[in-house]
Image (cartoon, rainbow, N blue to C red; front, top):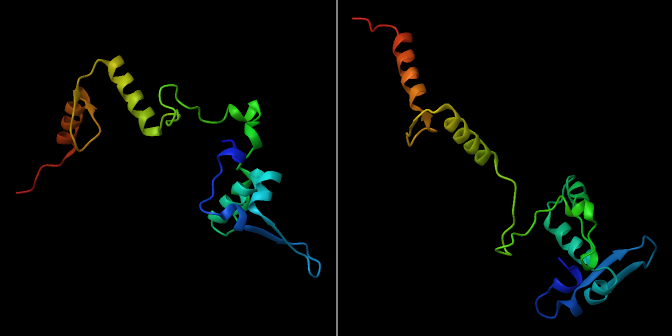
Length: 149
């Protein structure tokens, strides 16, 4: 994200929105227009917007520490390695690591392929190998006590 180029405000907010702070001295209220702030420190405009969206609690500062903003796309290569990459075929999708459920499904399919079991698909359960299902039913029948008359 090129912050200085792609950041947009609706209406005439670049001229109307003011960023205010106090120096701590009497009469020390300072203010600057958003247009001037964008020219001086474009990353501040976005950081301030994100900060005001976060909940006002003790975690806000630690969350903002993890927000990395760089002006004019000057991102260090070490940080780029940790970011999601944009897919080559569709620029709006990002590649991401597989979820835990996807990993478990892939592992399960691999183990099934290696073991040679047939899959007994039950819509209520995760698919189990047919041999394990039959063995489980037989074990359940043996472990249940006989019904009293």
